[in-house]
Length: 265
Image (cartoon, rainbow, N blue to C red; front, side, top):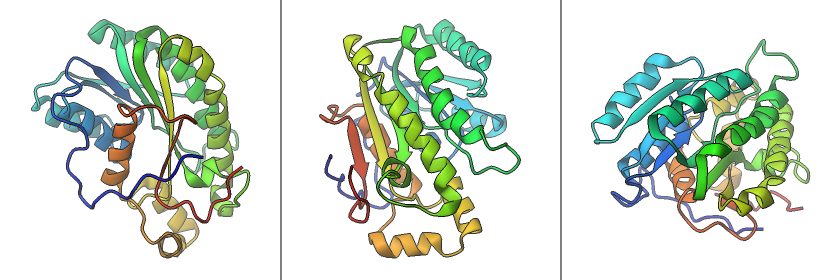
């Protein structure tokens, strides 16, 4: 298993060299806020044209787009429900019309703790939708392009390390999504497409962390004490951005933060 990546410095500068992605196009799912928004910002700061995807936060996505356009890059804002194949197809059709191709696809959007979404929603979003998004993007991904799947240690290690009961459905569904995506690695390699799983511990300031804390008060503080440190949103996003350009690890896995309390398979 890959060694954990060293901890980033608080409020670290942009992780990618200025201009290093000029002429490239990157799409980050769920990028109107949080980790996705910071990741897409890092790509834009490196010169990439970017696609901001959102489900129901259009004003927030447009505000981010306006900020990124000031960097001199092209920004496309596309709303799409990733669990709706027709919506996903429409999103990539718009990407093709605007940019013609795609160099980086970050599968960041996930969920399953939202209320009122039904028991099957987590699996539908975290497994089925991830595979469909990748398959729909394939015609746009060429040689030396990169796909990054964002997950958590609690999901990545769920087979060997129990997690909080409130998070189990999400963890199981995200691990199922990771497994389904990993099955695509040989076919992706034949096309020259690199694939990396980025797994992180609980991230301070994310929606998931907030929901977990609400359901299980003290959970974040307990994990922070055990791990010694938890990454914040911008720090973890920097590692996701680096995964899009760094050499692909031999096991296609980039572990971020402490993993000492998680048992490997």
